[in-house]
Image (cartoon, rainbow, N blue to C red; front, side):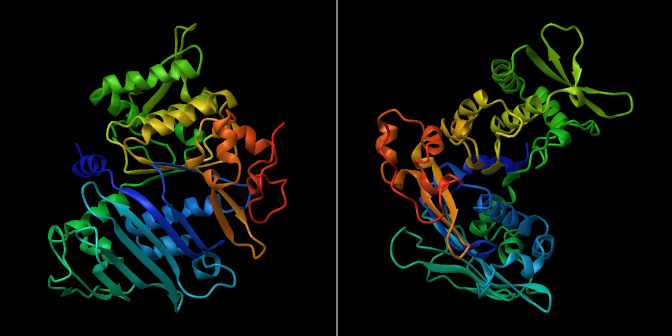
Length: 412
């Protein structure tokens, strides 16, 4: 089994805090006390997909390099907040099991049409108290780092210049065994699965060969099912059992190797002798299958992002999908965006963050649990999706005048 996958799954680092500055509509945005399952709700254009893209951008900086991730998003002209000064900044506070929280900050700006790491640092209080200190601190490719399993403020910092100012220091130093805390962050971020699952992609016929992890689009779904069939038959049967409960008449799914070396995904319906090719299966069936494979991964990614899971799925399936996400959050951390009241009906107020744009056009956020009256309504038996459709979440409703969250009206 892949060592990095095992470490990421068993380590289960969790993000507790996110701060973003100058990233498109996210001029100054904070998420405090992030839960294992966090769901973003808001009208079109409120910034949900932009928050989602923050995680994708950070992951791509580590996987593809800062330059490619920056250029892909239109460089500073399109990426930086309108009217904002200063660099694009992402700051996360995360916690590895048994260790104090660690804060990672990355600030990027542009010079001569090229991205430059203006500032990058890692800091913690080794014993969980006292003033935090930086055990990695770089600016424009020049900086220092402390090696060792548990860096201390009194340890010697070594000067470690990078080859260029667009290199991510954590990505570079995290490849060396003498920097285990830096390596742990590198493994954590490169292990993220920020999903853009597509039913059309899942219909493809890839080359045969088992693969442990789904791609972001799901175009290797057949390969992952082949892997599960060979290595985790019981887990695959659990997935099929859930699928059978959600989609009537589905018996099982086959990944069959063809003579030309391609892998053919087929879905067997109960009334018929021969299975249906995946390219003729419904979008909803393929999307649900892909979500279940992702959520029931035997060694899941440390972080999973799912955008608008309600697309192509029957509304009655969505509260149960929300429960599947919550169950999976015991083994991984999930970020989900949604417009669906049915998906919301399966959630708790502490799991939902409502987003809206203020009068200046910048994204703001509030926990549903902190909106006046919402916890009381839920305690009385109301569901979040119902409250949203009634306008009780204020700015979460696109027909409500945008601005600060309003006090919910008394339900009759």
